[in-house]
Image (tube, rainbow, N blue to C red; front, side, top):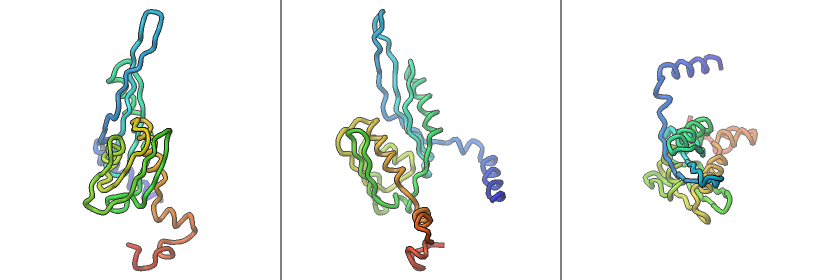
Length: 183
């Protein structure tokens, strides 16, 4: 265990700036107004998705008086709140569905070569996460914030085969047999 930890820290030191290479996408920028005694005071909110194209993805909302500061805050928060998506080859292991507000997102795994067949906010999340083959459908509200939150909920439901086997107290060989388990 300690050897593995040391190996990871050595890799992290050697890669340096490579660890900070994230793919970013600004999904939505909104101008909001607060009415005060002297008139209106404008601010901005930015919805951003960040990923390393290797299964890690984070989504956040940033608010500020200027667009650039709102995006910077959102990017910083998204990097902090990244989570891992388990892959099966170039897609997800199984179909998932989630709902947030009036938005519902259905995500299906797809065969190799299908591409990212998803609309708007879901497409951006999948592309920065590194998912290459996926089928997704958004039903209900198309509000980007709710669609992204529903997508994140769906992706967080995903588990690896190893994790599911461990939860059941079995090994992969017990569940799938000798022929299906890759060493």
